[in-house]
Amino acid sequence: MQHPPAHAWADQDVGGTNARFALTDLGCEAPLVAHSQSLPTSQFASLQHAAQHYLGAVGAVPRRAAIAVASPVDADEIRLTNRAWSFSRAELQQALALDELLLLNDFGAVAWAAPSLDPSSCIPLYGPTAATLRGPVTLIGPGTGLGVALLVGSFERGWQVVETEGGHVSFAPIGDEEQAIARWVTAHFGRASNERVLCGKGLSHIDAVLRDPQIIRGTDVSGREPPLRDPADIVTAALEGNDLSARRALARFCAILGSVAGDAALIHGARTVLIAGGIIPRFVPFLRSSAFRERFLAKGRFAPYLESVAIHVVTHPHPGLLGAATALRAAALR
Image (cartoon, rainbow, N blue to C red; front, side, top):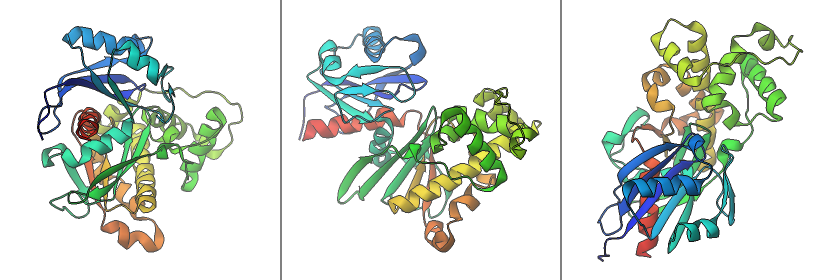
């Protein structure tokens, strides 16, 4: 069934570090994105201002939009988890003169993109290398936060996205170092969740704790704040190989990700795990040589089950934009 071309814009990861925008044409046979642009959220007072800036720059007046945000989207009032932005769904739709506004969770949008990803957009990590995507699919990704989503179905029966807030479940530390990390995170934030550890700032927290022997031993009761290094600097130093503390922090980060990804796969009954987000694609070889696989499989009697789960790293530059465009197209076809 053909539909007349209709421009729409899609946005992914609003409220983290960047707001990414693009245009899509709903008249195309497959979801495509064009004129993509990434804007630092720190430069704008609100989502509305960022969106209007983008639309003015590209000279577009869309009638439909899909926006993926890093927060739950089940109410009119949306409050972003990792950015001090909030907005009313109805007021934003009116301010942008939209006929339709579709709101998605940011990792729900990544899940929408998964069936459309071609082999060049993923790197096989472990497990079977099936020619087609096998569901259920767990999607997980550290970035500004920790996204988790579930994709169920198949190409034959169709796919359904289940949006979750799985990144906020409690962190389950293993060993003395992770116990120390959990104590430090709890002392500073009141609770140690997976997202507090498996994100950009989380890598900085891991690095700071592991560089302080007193925190590891539990003998530091001063409550002082250890110096935090930028996560990008930690990754760079670890990959260059000369900074042992950076390599230790990144290795611990990968090990914890393995545990969390394995837990999520068991909870979802996954046959495939897709790792997305802004961090992991930067150091896939390091991840492969780390304890990620060991910790992913360390689930007792269910290790054989997890050995059959395919694990891939998503390298598509903007899967959330592609997913938002896919969801918007699906809504238009209904």
